[in-house]
Image (tube, rainbow, N blue to C red; front, side):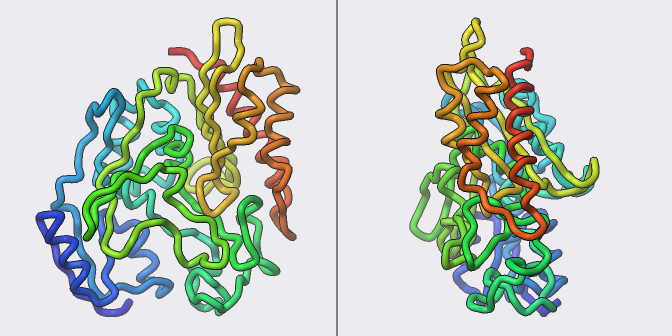
Amino acid sequence: MNPFTYVRPTTVDDAIREFAAGPNAAYIAGGTNLVDYMKMGSLSAGRLIDINGLPFTGISEHNGGVRIGALVSNTELANHPLIRSRYPVLSQATLAGASQQLRNMASVGGNVLQHTRCYYFYDPSFPECNKRVPGSGCGALKGENRIHAILGQSEACIAVHPSDMCVAFSALDAMVQVRGPKGSRAVPFAEFHRLPGNTPHIDTVLQPGELIASIDLPALPYAWRSRYVKARDRHSYAFALVSVAAVINAEPDGTISEAHLALGGVAMKPWRARKAEAALRGKKAEAETVLAAANSELADAHGYTDNSFKIELARRCIKRAVRLAMEAQV
């Protein structure tokens, strides 16, 4: 690990000023992602700004919904009564990630900003990784790609975003509240992460010095009817091969009036399944209807040597998530 300086500001303005002082500065909260990559040498930081003293804590009612501070731990989020009762899909997704020890340390903001677990990015002994060294190529294209993307990828990068929590945030139409040198702004969650395109080294729309202050959940009175489905290689401490967050609003006769679906493990950002949502609205969640909706979403999916199985897996996960959400009870 390279040497670095460390500061712990107590105000947001001080944190932003410390970031600007550089060189190669990075914010750190729980450190469960950043420190790993610094140890491996896949990322470096000359200056760490510890933001744990900033007022980005707590979970509270906000504009009819809920505001989640960026420094809230994953454990606190998953177990909070407001989240468990109103947005169960978020609690389920959070509990599906990592281990209890990591959830105790990891922050919500850090989870949103975590880096891909692509082997070629994680290990600097692999020379080809456009995310780590722009222009060097993508080793996964013709290499080990079992865990990689089937949607939204490019010739420059086929990595996936590893978060479970973010899949639920996407399905819930969350809003990211950002603070930075130019003030405050709000970013819809679906627009926060970027697909790789020709610039896979740019993960989000954050500008230099900006940091996440909170995540806001809208008032969704039907979000109790939601479920998270995760397919992985082992029951715990494994990233999703495919996951689905489903939030359903249904009429008494079973007709779906609103559907929110997001997929994880399939793209470099949580993948909002807009085509499948449109295909479900106004229809009953019969097996053939849900299958047709899943097929419409996955029509452009593309697999590689080792991960083509994800297309069928995603189809089945969508079907299961919708069924479980429809069966949910208050």
